[in-house]
Length: 182
Image (cartoon, rainbow, N blue to C red; front, side, top):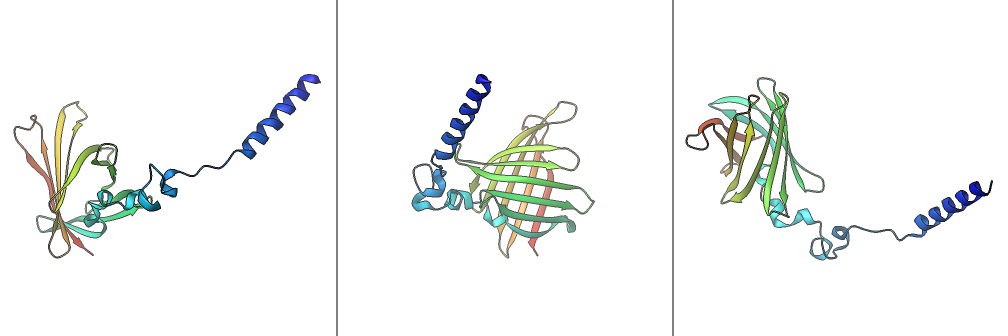
């Protein structure tokens, strides 16, 4: 019985410690060190807005034909650009695109309905965004990828995706699409 009494006292003390502990607020919400200046949300800073030209509802065309549609949205308080792709042939895919402040680079993680994954690293360039990365085929062969998104006049975006299966000696076009804002 004495052991049960001691256990009960320990539980009560632990509960009091938790109940009396001060609540903490993440630095980004207070404007203190580690957050954005003046209490602004960190993902409102200019670096996080470099890929905003791609945000929107799009019809995507390739070689003069409809390739699919894309809904590209800012989520998680503007920290992520989230892509929802629906291909004209029925395939789907999603990507998370975000500025990584620790590396100073953009990252894209793409997953499609066929289970393929593509992880890319990139940076803004005049009028667009460039990504590069590697993947492995199911047979274990290395494929290099480079994607260039370019903001065009008339509220359009071009996406050029190239691949190399020989270590970058030669490149072939995997996709060359034009995004037309709906």
